[in-house]
Length: 147
Image 1 (spheres, rainbow, N blue to C red):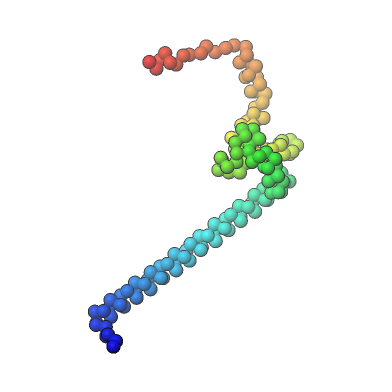
Image 2: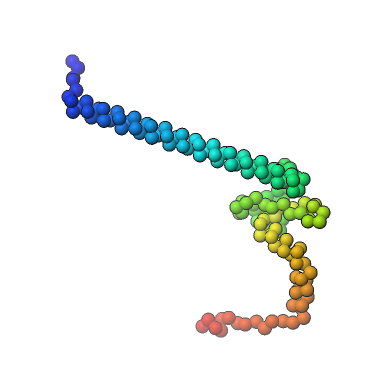
């Protein structure tokens, strides 16, 4: 024998079905939004890769394969400070001679910037270092002042 539902049971059944349908719609919308976000992330990643290829080709006449080969030769590390590229937010920079355009190696941002300043102010730095040898600066013992 089949039990008939009371009016109250039918209302609860309809309510549960409505909630389930709303949750299903919400889950479908969240899934749709996540798929859009993933597509956008992929588009940006592809755009970044393409931009990197163009930059290497236009600035240094270099391919991504050449870059990766040079990176492998350096053990994945900056040619100056020897820190691994995984320690940095951005990929290693291509160091090149600004007069000849010849690529010398891959450097982290700090070493690349420092080398750039050194090359730009080489004469001034050499003069400063030579002048420093002519005199000594008295050293202050800071421990005397902290006690």
